[in-house]
Every structure is written in structure tokens, then in C-alpha cells.
Image 1 (cartoon, one colour):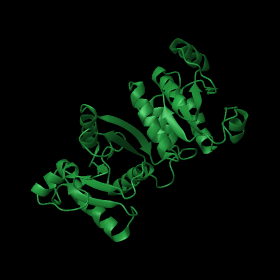
Image 2 (cartoon, helix red, strand yellow):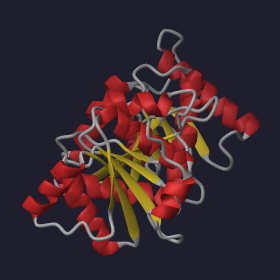
Image 3 (cartoon, one colour):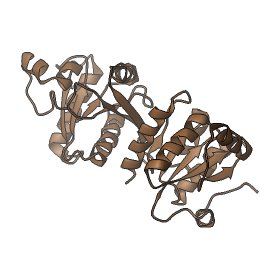
Image 4 (cartoon, one colour):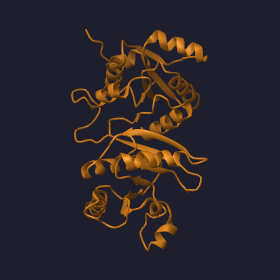
Length: 303
């Protein structure tokens, strides 16, 4: 019989009632274990480690890590790791999912599975990155640099909602959203500009984004610089004070995020929103610091 996760598992494994639990899917992964060690020293966080038990223990010993109260859930392969971790979320035992060595395709497949997946009906999965720049006065959220390739208008609505949720978790009372496009005028031949105009109209007439301020289309310089907006004769609450940048597609968002993250003194983190819980979906090559920052962000959002 296929092994299943249940609420009884969580109780049997003595997960602490008042702490958050992070599931690492594919935990036989050095950077993920180092990330776990760093967070365990700073926060009251429990960890469930899904993967090859022997390999996880060997790797921890090589790294000089004490697994402490972390609990290993032995699995045969990546698919079973993703499946059992997903069931742990459904059972209410896990508050954050983190991808370790498991392949992204197996990981996402289980999240999107209609029978046991974690995506609510009508929900939109999207990546939200948090970037702190030395020359910008506050953290900046960017979406979507990893998941949605060519999002249509409806998906952009979901992406904005996800980013606003992250902003509120970080203490932003009234998030300011800049809908970024190549130009500031609406051009029917440029769908990103017509989407921007529709998003602004939607918010002004329905408040679908609660009290958030949504403005655009804006070029990137206008979103980040009040002086650039002034020179171009553009008015609004968002220019130079954006909390969230909605980029038109992956082709624009991914290099924008990478360029800003590479700026000297910049720090960045990223999570996937839209599922039942926040997900840390870093690259398998990401080092400990990037994983720690992303996991911190996910824990903040899961509060």
C-alpha cells in the first residue's frame, strides 16, 4: 500500500503545536540542510525532511550538522517526496514548502495535481521576488520572474493579488503597484499597455485589490524615480514610490530581477504564492544565503 501522510503522522512525530513547520522536499541537498541549520538557530521552526534517509544522514554528518529535532520522512524517489510533502500540507502539519534536490517538474506537478494539489480552484501560482536596493528607500517586490511566461489579463490579476499579500505580510499598509511596460501610453499593438490600462480601470471601479494603488502603464524608470516621472510630466502616487513592480512577462521580469539583484549591495529573495502555503522554489544551484532569505520571506508570509 502506498504510504500516505495524515494528521496522525504529525502527532506521532511530535511536531510542536505553536511552531511553524517547513517541509524540505528532496532534503539530501547540502545547501538546503545548511539553510535549515541557519533558520533553526534564529527562529522557532521545525523541519520535516523528505528524501533518502541514509543519504540525508550521511550528508548531515559530512557537513557537521546535528539534525536535532528535525524529522526525516523516508521516501523512494522525488515523486514520492513531493507527494508526501503535499499531503503533509493538506493535513495541516506544514506551513511552508521548500524545494531541495527534487526536480522542479515533479515538485510543481504535485502542487498542481487537481486531486491532491495545493492550488485552490481559480488560483494563480506566481513568483514574487523581494529585492532590497541600496539606492531605493524600501523593499521592492517584483513579479513574475519564474512561473508565468506570457500571462494574460486574468493571470495578471492573480499575480497582483499574490504580490499584494506578500507586501501586506511585510507591513505595507497600502501597497503601490506599478504596471511596468516599455512606454507610458496605451497602444493597442502593445498588449502590455492595454492590460495595464485595464488593471488600473479595474481597481478604480471595483477595488478588487482592496486599498492598493495601481497605476500604469509606466516605464521602469518612472516606477522607480519620481524625478524621471516629473521630467516626463507623469503624475500619480506610484512613480518613484512603488512597492510592487508587475512586469509584462517572463522575458521582461527575469532579466530585470537578475540585473537588480546583481547591483552591488543588493539582496534578494523569492517565493511562489497562490498555493495553500508559500513555497520556496530556489534553483538547485542557489547557495545558502539565497535560500535563507527566501525561507525567511516565506515564513513571514505564512504568519
